[in-house]
Length: 290
Image (cartoon, rainbow, N blue to C red):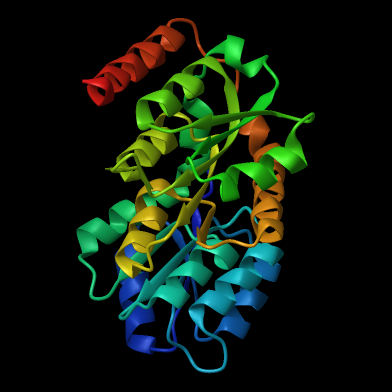
């Protein structure tokens, strides 16, 4: 008996687009389609869907609104937004409310789009196969703040000290050293620290430590940056500065809950893989220090 194919749900008010999706993906996946957000949510209610792909510009219910509701109905379903235009507000809502996996711009290249879908389908499997040092797994959780701004550090310290170890780093090498030594549950990072962009660091963090939940705080009102953070680092929340302390604390609370709900994805590492991961991290650490 052959295993069931992963299921995809495509949502678009253009029939032509839906037909092209069916033609592109049906050979390898079970494909469902919906012409509106309401139809999509009904489909999620009645089917196990691995990935939902939704167009942003639709009548009555936008793509972001649809994906935000989809997250409540089926939180395990990976969410992807298609859009022919972008603005900062849409990008921020996409990251903070719909919690999307990828932000795909129209028109797309079919080969690249298939790669995005394939990655999305295998997200849980991939994360569960990545090894992590057992010594870190047995340590209490810590929160790492990669930002020298006291308006970020102080409310987090006040709220979570006593429950978690709170570490503050003023540079990427210092942050990496904390990640290697401690069991970091949540990273709160500015997008620039000590004159360096943290985008590459967060991308590597996502690849090597997918169980760490990241929050980015930023002075920049730059839509392309938000899109990069969504697509490359799968940042959990993106908060523009200045941030209300209550909103920052609430976002960290949500990140910790997200970590708890996904903690069982990471199994005990296989023999020999721990050394490989540590060696890889050391090489990257030395590159930033040099």
